[in-house]
Structure formats: structure tokens, C-alpha cells
Image (cartoon, rainbow, N blue to C red; front, top):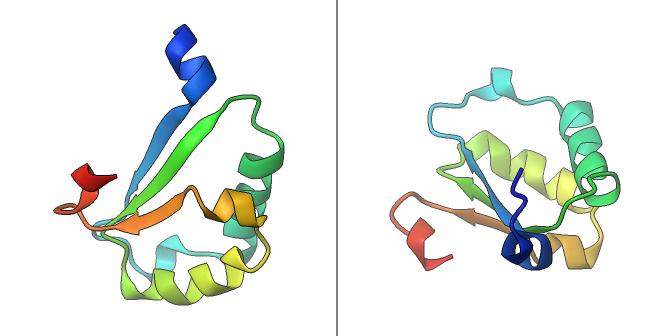
Length: 88
């Protein structure tokens, strides 16, 4: 990751481009574990997570996954489209 002082203080932006994803790309336990790892184990600052062009199946998974996330962590999770991504 970045070694710049700016990024160490402000954090980085994680962008997950989900264009073309299907149901096969999703697994509840996998995503729950990923979110747990990210919010409690990563030794880096993440300013925000952008999920871009999410498929409809993600919305159902997101409702389940987001229920187990800390509220401060949910605030940095942004679901957006490719066209609106620059606003974030």
C-alpha cells in the first residue's frame, strides 16, 4: 500500500468494480469474514470503500452483511455507479 504520510493520516479508497458479477461470485460467509477482517484486522486506514455497479443480488447480500458491521464502518461503505463515482 502507500507509504506517503498523507495516505497514512487520511487513508486510502478501496474500489470494488462489480460490473458483470453474478450470483456465483457471492457467498455469505465469505463476505461476512471479509468485512470482519477489514474492519478489525487491517493495519491500514481506509477512508472509504466504493462498490461500483453492483448487481441486484448484491443488495440482498448487503442487507445481511451490513447488519453485522459497526455503524462507523458502515458510513465509509458507499454503493455507487460508474457515472456517479467521481462524486465520492
